[in-house]
Amino acid sequence: MRHKIYDFLLSKGISEGTAAFLNMMVLLIALLIVAFIIDFITKRILWKISESVAKRTSTNFDDILITNKLPRNIAHIIPLIILIEFVPDVFTDYLDIEDIVEKALKIIAVFLTLSIARSFFSSVRDYLKTKNSFKDKPIDSYIQVFMIFGWILGIFTMVAIVTGISFFQFLGSIGAASAIIILVFRDTILGFVASIQVTINDMVRIGDWITFEKYGADGDVTEINLATVKVQNWDKTITTIPTYALISDSFKNWRGMMDSGGRRIKRSVIIRTASIHFLTPEDIERLKKIELVSDYITEKGSEIEKFNSAEGIDKSVLINGRNLTNFGVFRKYLLTYIENHSAVNKDMTLMVRQLEPTPQGIPMEIYAFSSDIRWKNYEFIMGDIFDHVLASVKYFDLEIYELGMHIDA
Image 1 (tube, rainbow, N blue to C red):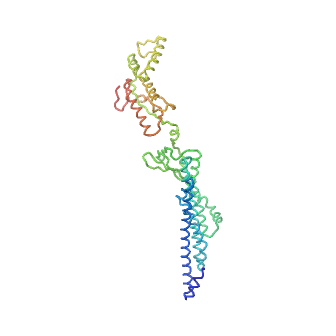
Image 2 (cartoon, rainbow, N blue to C red):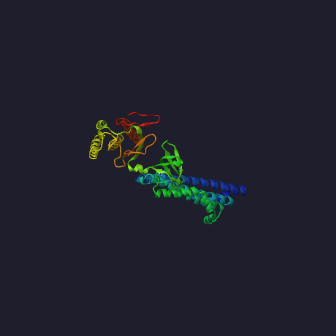
Image 3 (cartoon, rainbow, N blue to C red):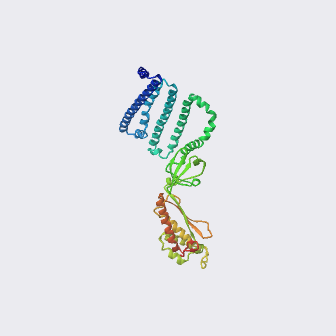
């Protein structure tokens, strides 16, 4: 067939060179048309088969394969094989062009193989992300590693095709350049190792709230891939962190707090030292009307009175013996208030404590955990607690320090 057109043209008195060229062009056009038709038919057939199979199966993996165009990429294989097979017949009189076209088609075959691999691995990635057990895993990192190795092998294969040497000979020749390759792919290698360590040690998952001061990150992890970790900050900005920084630098992961079922409240008010005093009998009777400390004052007052009587303490001077103070009663009041607060987690640490005195006064700190860890609700709970604290101070004849002024009880 490859010479029939050529012989026909010669019989019509056309020169050998022109006949050979026209023969090549006609065969090339015919081959391209056939390849295009076969490619179109193959794509349609594979598409129909894929859709039919996807509708009958319960899994969505085949649907994802279609979405990532795997059937379409596979359909290109048959036309490409036909082109490679018949190129020698088309360029039988142009051996130099035949060699170039064959190498070009082989390079296209490498690209096609990589496209098929990418479609498949992308489908695996998308499928695993639909599974709850894999949603927080750095699947992107592993897929990227496979594709990087695939592209490295593909590039090596293409260079071997162009140079005309065997693939294994080419690999042997670049052994001496391995140090340069490692240098070029340093971040990729570090990222891959970091991804493995992060997964094995369960350091970070997608959806975790992390704080990374070095990179200014404070928000939820949205993506973990081979080179970077993306964090969406609370102001909706995106911070990108090198993956290997997760194992080389220090960061805070708030997952423990999220899993614990409680979010810490640790805040204090500063009480002016001058407002702290012993309670007189009149003060005690007045404070007994406050329900949350009524029983405490009665029991503690009785205990103190018995002690002072047994020891023969002269109570004509208030400082003698044991006494109640407005500061101590207020501390007990706050503790009882927190213990009875419906939004405080009673199974976690809960205390009201007096901190070290400062030049401004004595800090009274509430240390507890809210039962609702959602940011908005947490802030509301903490605000509600300290609204009450600030409003209740005056009932105990205490004053809160403010710069340049103070709140009178």
